[in-house]
Image 1 (tube, rainbow, N blue to C red):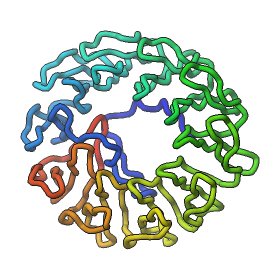
Image 2: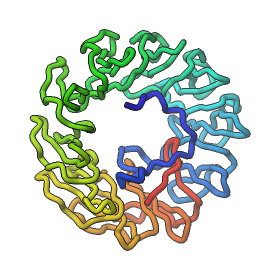
Image 3: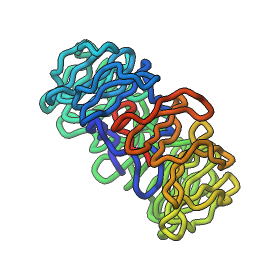
Image 4: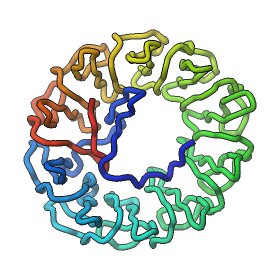
Length: 384
């Protein structure tokens, strides 16, 4: 398992995984925040408005999306905060920073320590942690101090003491996976160990179930720790829309919440369901298709494709053209060199003649491809 805490990455990160064919968009995030979107020109970053006009010239070495009227930017190796006019609210002084959303303390790094600030640079939680992740929607953050991991709340108080070798989560029920030595279990947001640490691997809860490693492979437990699906799988993911991708041998399929196969394991890969469709890698090892709620393959074999978001998905044909399709698998845009999935505010990013623009399906909103890249939140989006 990967530790959730590894969230302090460079501002330009590749989102598109080469093996799954998934798109960088589709998680509900907006492309424009506070009316602005990060763009790249000549290796520097600035901000444009929804008409594609430059609002803040490209001058920063890295730039985060705006949140609550501020954005973290990097200049000459240090991060500070600017307002929507491009003026500094906090001069560059941090070795890393994330934008402050007005509610959850923003993660910063100074020297070798991590802490949390507001957009004025005032410390809400002093830099004291050897490693730390951002606050999530539950209002908690995973931190490390003196080689041990725990969980803090917005006031900086530990809700789970820093006593574990690993902390992962929380799941959608608020439980964290906690590891001591080689054994994993679950703790709730009050720090109480609710499921004994007896598993060699464990994953966060999703839709009431969590995958755990048993002597016979991965199985699933419920929130009381009772086994619901016996261990039998060589690998698995999390439940989504009532289905879970599982691997048997080297082949992937899907099970339902009773552990029955909804799609027999016969595919090279499988991704989570979204808006009624899963994604599978076909046996040829080169193409991908969708699988519907009945377990039937739908659509042709694509070179790459994305999860559905807002009724649309990005696909790349075997001929190299990229477009958006709807849930009837009908093309909804022209073909581009590259395209992203749909963002939470209805935009998609496309590339043509080596430059990036943005548009909305069935709308005149958007602008022509003018920029070297367009970005959302803290990550440089790589479309396909």
